Length: 366
Image (cartoon, rainbow, N blue to C red):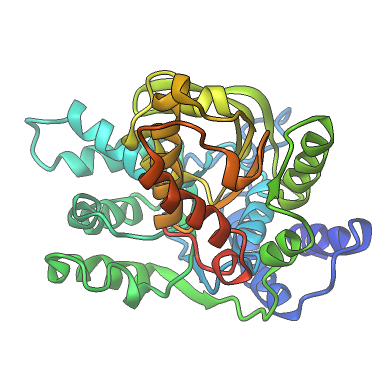
C-alpha cells in the first residue's frame, strides 16, 4: 500500500475516525502525485541519506488543487500528504502567510527588473513541493502579482498542492480589476489537477456542536474543556506549540497555544497592551479558530482593553472566525464600564450569534 494511503487507513483504525469515501478519493489522487514525485526524484543525496533531495529537476510534475466546502478535511489530507512526503525541500504554509512573505521579499528586490521572478526563484532554490492552505484571494495587491508568481514557480518546476473553499474559476470573484487576475486562474488550471472533495460531513462543525464555545467562569475546568476542544480540532498529523510567540504586524504576541490554523490567547496578551485593529485583521486571516480565556469583568479601569476586545470580535465576526472564549462573567455582564455601553451591545449580540450553528457552519474568509 502507498505511504499516504497507509497512513490514512491507520488513522481510521487507530483514531476511531469514520471512513469517508470522498476523502479516500482525494487520498488516491494525492498518492499518485506522491508516487510520481518519489519515482522522478528517487536518488538519495548519499548512501547515508534516508531522505530524497530534489536538486535536479528535469521534469515538471503537475500539482493538485483541492476545493470543497468548509470542514470537509481538505487541510487534513494535505497535511497527511506533506507529513508522508520524504523530501527536505518542501514547505507548508497558509496562503496569507505566503503572500505576506512574498510582499516582504519584493521589497528586497525593488528596483530590479521582474522582481516577482526573483522572489519565485529564491523560493524555488529551497522548495520543490509547496503546500498552500486556504487559497482565497480578496486583496487587490495579492491578485495583481499572483499570475506572475505562480507562472514562475511552475517554470521553476515547483509542485503545488493547494486547498481552497472555492474552485479556481471562482477565485477573486467580483474583485477590482479581476481581468488582470484571470491569467492566474488559467495558470492554476493548466498546472494542477483540480479535485473537489465532495464529503457531506462538516467535521469541524460536528466537533464544535459537541461542545460549548462560551465558558463562564474562566477557571481550571474551562481550561481543561478548551484543551480538549483544541486537541480534537487538530488534524492527526498536526503539531501544536505552547507558550509560543507569533509575529503579528512585526510585533511579537504571546500565544498560550498555537497550531497551523488554531490559536489560543490569554486575554491579557491579546487585548491588553499595544494591540491594534490590524493585529486582529491578520490573526483573523491566518486562523480559522481562535480561543481566548481569562476574560475579566471589563470596568471603567479597563476601557482600553474593552475597546480592543470589541475590535477583535468585530474582525473575527467579519471573517467567520470560530471564537471560543472563557470569561469570568456571562456575556451580558462582561462589560461594566461607561464609555462603550452602546458599542458593547453590538459585541454582546455578535458573541451570542457566534455560538449558533448557522454561524459555526460558515466558511472562514482568510
